[in-house]
Length: 164
Length: 368
Image (cartoon, rainbow over all chains, first blue to last red):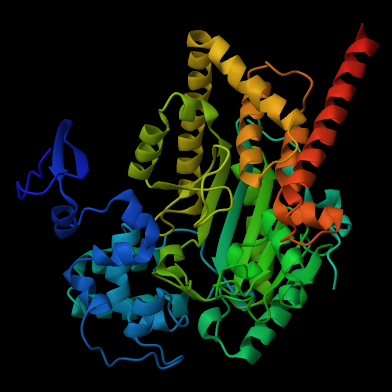
């Protein structure tokens, strides 16, 4: 069977998609599949994070390509360290590379907004410091609007309203 | 330091006692929560003195919790390789923490505080990896225990948390809840009916993933699969567990159906497969670990189908643990590299099966 895309190489990947209850099957060779961002179980299993990062969109491009001089002020890690190891350096890296990570987290998990258990440190366990949390969220909202991330901004606005 | 499992309640084997729900198909349920300390780089980037401090703080905090007060602490960087491998074979620590990966020796200040079924790995790729193990299919009990430990530890050590991204982890694939729930499930029926690929593909489309017997990066042996959630962020712990629970329940149903089909359509072929596996285990003189696992899978299917009656699932679970290389070598006082191990394994399996068969026939004599 030939590849549906290039009509030259033999098809190695058979992709079945179900959209609105109609089933389509596409037969692709490995090269064309890679070009279209289709991952096979084998390639995904070998390098789970690399595979994922290979499929990230424009927003997270900084995680993949190009020179980026930013370094985390706490641990000194750069994006190239993350590219090499797939691991961030410290909790502050999440703030240093916030926008890039937000895009990546959305690609990985389908969302960047945590909705599970909330950590309450011992000192605030009984009297949650809601003013501090609110202030932090307002700051996040400001940054989200600045970055034209309106989806997140709307989420944050709703959460802030519900807390006020 | 030498390893003494007898200090642990039930020698740390409680999760393999086959007492839990659905234990004819599901061996065990395991939950883990990834957490990190505030004000310190993640393990891979931390300074040696930070790693030591993290270990000391977490051990101290852990000993103050009700759940781990009676736990045993293991400093992995003080243990011999065979002992670290033993803990890994018991599913108490990851391959990474055990320092078994090639070119990746055991990390400084790597430690474990555990009761056997509940514990915390220290200085894995995250500072804390809480883990709860239960017999059979028991997500709710496993979660209740780990949630309590998480709250107790969180009161004593400050944990890195972000209002948007949730619990912060070294790898973004674990951020948010930090929760990975996995169920170790035996699926010989789906493998024999060749339905397994379809089922696994279906699971990947609903956000679940599968791994081998020892978790991440391990091969599938003996038809044992670990099914777990793929994403950790954007859904609450309850939603993640509920989804996994529904899907696993479906897989259990498929497996039961596949076994019915096999029994109905090819009873003689299945009986032959089962008894061949039993015969080889009972009489072989040399067994590799992988062969043992595959034969045990056939025998476990036979017990599940009631073809073999004189054998308990508990004995099978024990064999699963004690035929592993480090367990076998330690039991017999041999080196891991000993070329005699396959012979020793066969003789150990033979003894266990004979003992169980004798208990079974005594039971029948007494009853008649």
